[in-house]
Amino acid sequence: MEYLDFESPIKELVDQLAKTKEIGKDTDSNIKDLKKEIELKIKLKK
Image (cartoon, rainbow, N blue to C red):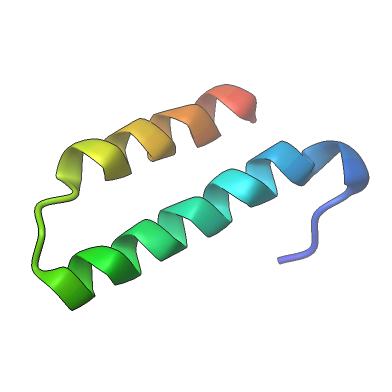
């Protein structure tokens, strides 16, 4: 997805969410709370 300059905070959060999901897969750790927190931040920024 392409982001405009003013959308860079949203892009950073989306990237962080993707990395968090990958870490959760790789380590079998429970990342539900962190994932929900990042998703909420994305919704609030939109």
